[in-house]
Length: 78
Image (cartoon, rainbow, N blue to C red; front, side):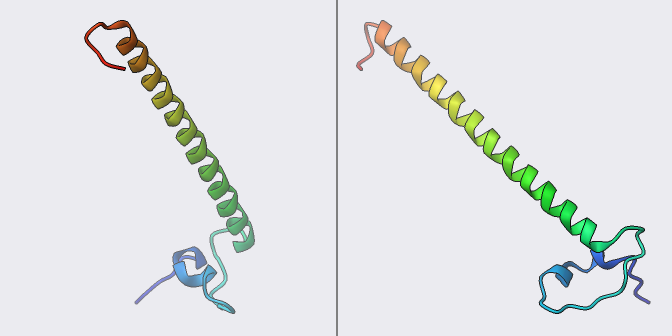
């Protein structure tokens, strides 16, 4: 027998229009869980963007160091 602990187990619940499912028994409403999921998704997006910027800055710094090293070396061509 299939036992569902709550609506969070049904992945299609938030994607299907006019989807009706069981009431949640997890102790909090599904709307609060959905708003929390959205907030966490926004935080994850912001973290990804900050990491992308950090990596881009690191590569710019690396590129600058390589160019400076080549500028000082007599054997390297600019």
